[in-house]
Image (cartoon, rainbow, N blue to C red; front, side, top):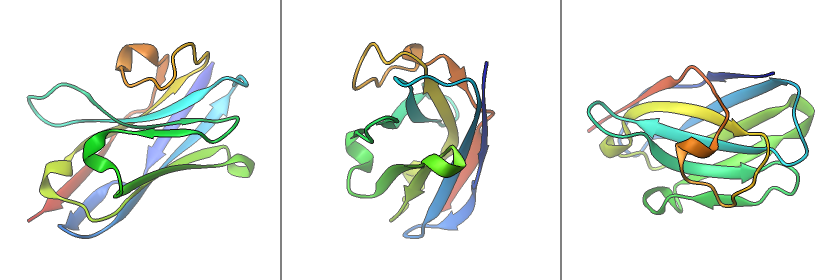
Length: 126
């Protein structure tokens, strides 16, 4: 079983930055992909970024390219989402997710992911 624990959400003004963290524990596999998704009220869950753990390959949703960076720290079993130049439209609950098998790459559908964190609120004021 894999457990994901998120942290780092909060309130920030437009143009500011936040870094989200997701600590991965339990049994993992060499093909694991980590993903970040977000969901605003009344909207569908939206893909943000994905990272293939073994080689560090990344993939981003178009609206966050050049602003967000997904990365990992192997020693800490942690994946990060560095969010820069934040906009009010980035306001959402952000979720960490894991795909243990990585059959599809890049994977932008939430249906691909097997495990999810609890979510952390990010609010960007104008």
